[in-house]
Image (tube, rainbow, N blue to C red):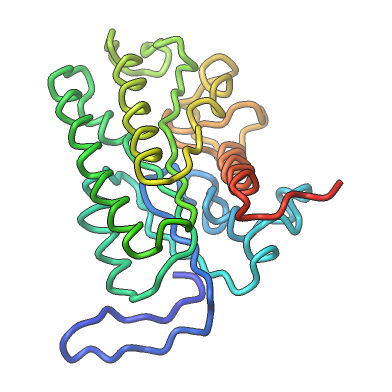
Length: 264
């Protein structure tokens, strides 16, 4: 974990001193937030929000948490394959072990909950209910720890078919109700954000038009020549998608007043 030196709390465990820092940015959730598919360490959406890669994105020089909020530390707990249950029962306990209080959280979840139900409407209904239950527990715990005013950004789930529902083009079996369930899951995420005074980061809307309608989302290149294509491996954000995600989070934080607006 970048910049941290921690051991879990526990009987007989010695707590190491953490470098002094007043601010912690916590990245929770699934692979939308991680580095792996965007090209490696430091290249995912959460990492770019924390510290820009100036060589890759010079237009974002100085527009990151490390520059604008000195002393911020990144706590990257998001992980590949995570569901809402993973966030609740694995990632949040890890945060508790660290004994720190984040002043900013980004949360991306729900996509794997839906994918695990593929082609099964009954399972999708149950998973949507579970998403609401897990989400409520997660956001309740975060609010209890952080207070009511600290920003929590809850991301919606994107659609690599760009609203076409064209599963065959994504090498997926057709599921006629897939887009309906995607809408329902996103409604659940928006409802959770509203209930717990969080901000919705509308990843779904931001990514529309950057999937199947402009290229092949199944391609595996993290830096495809087509910068309008924001996916790789069908459901992962490539480097351009990661930067777009960072931009969405940044704009949401400016709109919330957490970050100062840019001066022309």
